[in-house]
Image (cartoon, rainbow, N blue to C red):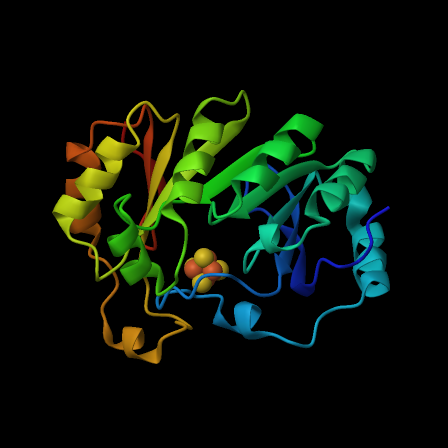
Length: 241
Ligand code: SF4
């Protein structure tokens, strides 16, 4: 059984914006092991008052007849050791499971794939894949080896997945193209527009959102991934390649 260690900051009972073509219950895991200044979930990663297991279960039961899947996002869900068991419980409820992660816990990703308790993984690739730059962009002392392992696990899996990068004001066009080359052969790469909304670091509220033209310029030059998608406020989701 799920032990209830997974802390839930908040939830959305029904949403169609997370997983194309699916109606999802969206759960925001509380807390994160990174401190990206552009993070728009600052309320979630700082939250200490979390929702009780019984409240979550009641909310899910109320809408279960109307949803296809559960989206588990955050914060960073893989910081909770009982996440795989929680996902297994969702699968037993015949819900598909969509996981958003920062890729810092490859052993848990491998375990979840082996247990077949997840159906889609969206992993952030936050910077070019070298330790110094990754630490600068995420403001965190992360293991770049773990990020590389997670990328490798997904690229050699049969699961449907995407890598995605927020084009923050601190990343250059060259760096975005470096990331696309480092994801050579990946099934899908999504470039997300930075927007100055609810940022963890308030100084990021003074930046402008990433111009649509800048995102298009990167997407049209990028070669590595098999499929390239952009997400912008102006035009929603567009497949570029
Ligand atoms: S954007 Fe960064 S800080 Fe925010 S939840 Fe994701 S990994 Fe954590």
